Image (cartoon, rainbow, N blue to C red):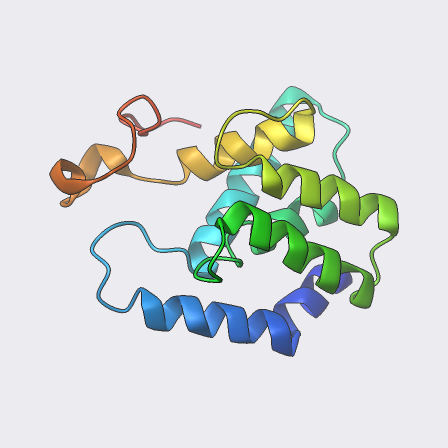
Length: 154
């Protein structure tokens, strides 16, 4: 997990996450913080293990850390997150192929449009990490009802 820790400790990543924290200081809906990213990573890890998928765990953790890090950049966060992955991952020791796998998954994480197991697991883990079933702001949420996680599940 050395390369994932390099992403986390990277000054650019830290600035993005601080910006998100500032923007979401008074947010009543789900947050896009490190706890969410790690929830996505851990749920994805369980899915990968249970389904016996050939997905590199360190690579998946990198995707989970970066999937929402592009929020509040002025363009859709899946696009800005993919661009951020393209910038940070090579600096942190990931190959061009690994960077492309993660970038593709981040681009598709807002809708279930991925064609790979990696993309599907990122999308699903992201949705399952949300506790819509007990959210106090559910009546005001803009998420489509079909995307909401209305039961405890893995």
